[in-house]
Length: 227
Image (cartoon, rainbow, N blue to C red; front, side, top):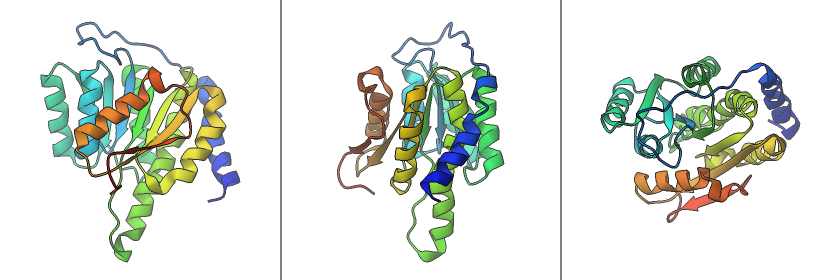
């Protein structure tokens, strides 16, 4: 897809931003933390880096909505976060499907009233030609669809941050960062190496914090050689 095409489609998604209402919801009884009051969306959140990041954001006070295809795992992650007095909601989601992603984002905003941070983490390993199509649909198209439906809500709320975990979608990430930075949306990415998922989660929270508010269109390596 050309740069002009990506701009046109993402721009079409953002055109509806002005009509989307954003409002806060009460966090009474929630443990205080760095991200208290923030609403965080995570794709690919049922295991590994996604699940670790969902737990870390919830422990830091955020209201977390995470998706994935594996319902049993998603419900278990949701249960453990709530047991630790965090706030999280699992929604079954397939990032390869536009309608599924649109519903995921809309349901999250409907539940919590706004969107502040999105961690687009869903991805699969591609080790053969047979896996190529699914890899493109998940690792590239899935990133595009997530951004397409997240951007209007982030803009409507006055800005926010998208963090991607997809080395295959770097051109898309840089394009979105350049196009929407002026509207208060930062778009950055991480490239995890051979480090524990919990370490990557802490890097995501660090990147999402105010300390790095000057970063836009950047790629942050986390750990050793990328996998």
